[in-house]
Amino acid sequence: MTSEAAPVAGIPATRYAERLAGARREAARAGLDALLVGVGADLRYLTGYEAMPLERLTMLVLPSMDGAAATLIAPRLEVTPARGSAAARTGAIEIATWEETEDPMALVASRLATATRGRADEVATVAVSDGLRAAFVLGLQRVLPGARFSLTSSVLRALRMRKDADEVALLRAAAAAADRVVLTIANGRLVGRTEADVAREVRERLVAEGHDRAEFSIVASGPNSASPHHDASDRVIAGGEPIVLDIGGTVHGYASDTTRTLWVTGPEDAAPAPEFLRLYGVLQAAQQAATAAVRPGVACDAIDAAARDVITDAGYGPWFFHRTGHGIGLEGHEDPYIVAGNGEPLGAGMAFSVEPGIYLEGRYGARIEDIVVCGETGPDVLNLTTRDLLVVRG
Image 1 (cartoon, rainbow, N blue to C red):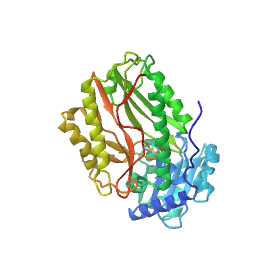
Image 2: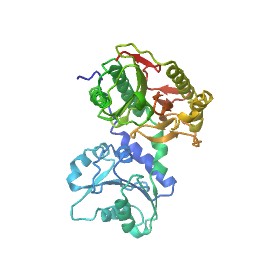
Image 3: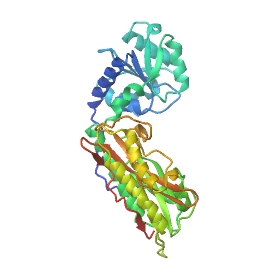
Image 4: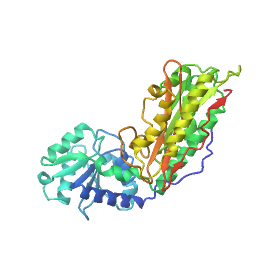
């Protein structure tokens, strides 16, 4: 299986110094002494380092004071990949290592104290990664006894939500690759294969099309299509039924996520049932309405309402029971969330899914999902495959 995708460049190494400076400014504005960033998307966003999630501490210590050194603390056995990170290569961060018999929390406290008030017990306010292990948080509380703790998302979400041109280019490349996989699967053999077998092919094709990794491949056939997060099973696909195909992975860390609904006629040419066609038409109108509503200043919950109102008016409201979308970037699900009650206004550069669905339990379901970037004047839709029902012989 060969790739059709042209190579795409990642985030320029020089960008990480800008990101670190922006995070430092936001931390200072929030009255924080420092950000303490563990393994995960925030660390990759700020340094370009995709660290292994170990029981050993890896942490970026980013003081808010101008001129204070940013330090990536890493176990010695991880020093080579840490030094290879974009921020380290360009001199934007220092690397400090700890030995197996040392207390890494003490190293965090020492570096932080040097950069702030001179004593660890005088550090007043820090923010830690949302997903930091409880054991690490307790360790930090031990060595920073006077500090008040909050979450880095309160500072970094504003930076990460608005994608720059390089980030949008990576999201677009990931979307295009996923689109190609959807069309290949739709035009291939389906009848007689298990969902799990098709899901394996999806994952292989995502990588062949340029993804770093395939994160998920939902293949939900027949009555399973009414389960939004169905795990591909040993169920054999037959003619005369729908398949919800929801796939995604990452390109240079930036995620793809798209869903298309197929109707497989099989050799008997079993056409879509009239009720399913009606359901799908309502869903398509809802997805179009939500996408058309995207522009700067429109509240996230207004996008959700644009889709939900169409579905509710058609009588399917109880069967659309998840949010309309989620933000996407270095994480498959991140801010902003397109959900009722989120009155946050959209801004240019925000990237998110628009993915209403209708699910009749025990019978069938359908979903249409695109990744959309809020442009200066309206939606920039990254997924370009048709949103019509894909009727295939299979």
